[in-house]
Length: 567
Image (cartoon, rainbow, N blue to C red):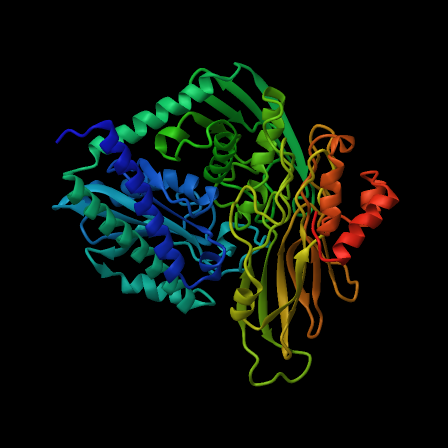
């Protein structure tokens, strides 16, 4: 049957709805708070050759764009003659999945009338995979946890119980992980059911027609955007904390006919600790940065991603190969967009934002009964991972977003969900005034957090922070954002990365970084300064010293606030 372009457009929109329902099924059924509360996941549908046709809106660029390459690995490893209806495939291989062992990817072949018509895939971050636990302390991939190569989770509908027993025997939270695996498999099944309903409704025997329509239109639209840009190149770089020593990220951006090349030659070499990045994850975030800037409204699929080519020397920190430790690959990977934008700003001024917090401000708490004195019978062991964000960088025409994750896009977890996951107490979680860099447009605010444990518990905290020594840099005259700080409540200094012990009764006090400002401070509208002061985003001292707001204006704003009025 031949379909019109209008019909194909309807089908394309329907496919996006299908994978969004697939993703929402994963959110609703997952056991890990990282999936249920933070949305650290991805979902997509693929043609029989493993080309991504559509992705869910819910999810992260690191998962979605990395998973775009994963299905081809599954097809190659499983073998086309070994793909059957009822199969479900699994891996957490960092180099053939999405970058580290804590991400499990499930792929399910989709059959219609006994013919393979495509695949569904989804990925989720799970809280524990054994080994040293989620952190940067490992010296190789072998210390970071259980590795599951691409294999069958289910063969023609029958789950591999041997695999399930091996997984259970190697992780701290077996019920949680096994629950997540079944949630992933169910997510794909939901996508498959909705796809078959769509195919029957539109009278489709296969996806060849709609796949060609999606890929051809996406490719053409993306190339039009690229070919309208100036043929030139520029370099960008940034320095971040690293683990023990600073890391330099460098990129040369070259805009050519039908492609944009990002070459990371000159970037720092491998780190001894687990902050290294597989190339698939580097590619995911470099592509994401460019698509956001150049073609944001073109849907993500194999064709719209293909013109963005990424290269990096083997064994630099953004092209780590086996057996490099990669557990916290997101810490470095989340700075790749700002590095790319440092170059793109030289080619397309007044387009990209200032630097932001970059990596997520995550920490994992490993709680246990206190060992310095008898613990109550109610004390338990528990692993609690919480997702948090610093401020986003200011944009050319708008302020940066407060406590918002860019580029990852995951949600900040609510206190209630975190405290429900284990005997942890979040004593403080609020915006951090004065942390956004000043400028014509102000950087987004970071936040304060203070964490402790319930009576009878001590804990280790896995810090996963950056921007301690290298805050976000302003753009076009904007000022820097505030740096990260971390210490115990008695003043004991703590490191920005690594596992650290916290005794019974002690708390960890953290201040997450702010985004940088854009444009010179003198150009900021005084009414915006007054609004920031009224909302508590800046203090009276900063309003006067940095923005030049007069004492009378400050007093007037404070009087309005006292009366409960806004500006």
